[in-house]
Image (cartoon, rainbow, N blue to C red; front, side, top):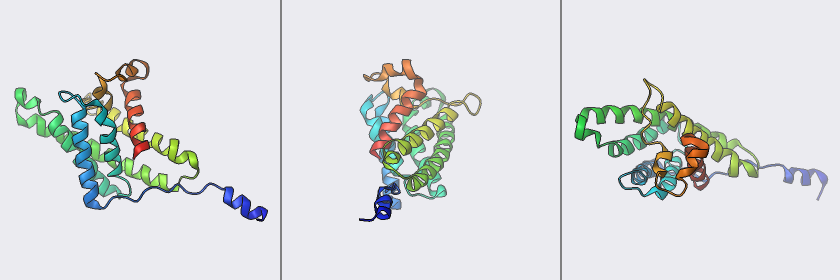
Length: 196
């Protein structure tokens, strides 16, 4: 083996991601992910389901164009919030439910676009650490960014449904006292991105 071929074999290869789901598979993954996310919050309190719910939501966005990612992200957000905040209809009627679900679906759609771009960037990454740390950290950071922005904009935002809130009765719920709600969201999304 020559020195040149040995050097070439040691160079980092591009990260090989799993193939994207077909369009119908992305829709199913998005809806199942939204369902699992809904179950991870109160009143169901199946908090371990937050990780597979986020992982499915991320897998649904892999390999999508930004326009399709907006639609899939918005579908995930709408399916999640339509059930997650349905309690407001008891006090305020259906109009606030439709309005808040629509606004949050827009945020999830914008987040879906960013996450799809991150998946695309991940295809260009090289090295062993790219798949283990860099891409999952990027995906988790973008998930956290979307949550943080939707929690503050517009007019104070709507922070209901942050991943950290699903962990109120879990053993890791106290982690929020150390890293805050955004930090716990990042940790949960990071683990989910590792699985995705």
